[in-house]
Length: 146
Ligand SMILES: [Zn+2]
Ligand SMILES: [Zn+2]
Image (cartoon, rainbow, N blue to C red; front, side, top):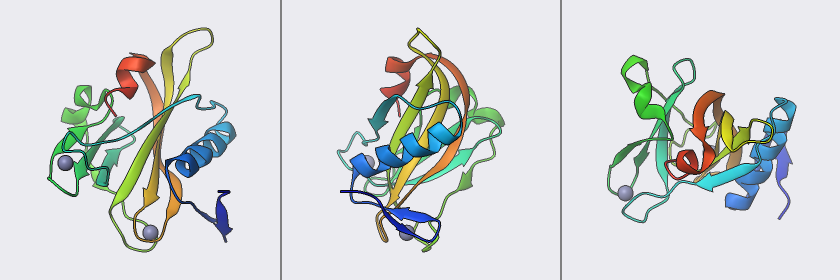
């Protein structure tokens, strides 16, 4: 399904649509995301509230089913200095499906830039809610921890 556009917002139906939006956004940021991973809680649920500090380079997701708090990617390394702010959708909802994308350095598997894509569970808005330059190394290890 193609993304639906209303004004400056885009709406979609699932992880594929989040990926499409992360690809679009990241291209306009000059570091295109080429690898992606969706977030899932250890309890099996995949809807979260999201808090981040782009300055510090840290994000955490809180499972809306079991309340488990997970520091995403390499965020544990930066969480001490982070001042986490909660994200909410333009519709007011704070529960999202998450799909992260990373841009890599040329001819390597090392992360260069992180994009956190979200889809609102209430109104289906998709967007990149946070992104920053990341030097966390191996993309496989990083994406396994989003
Ligand atoms: Zn959970
Ligand atoms: Zn919404």
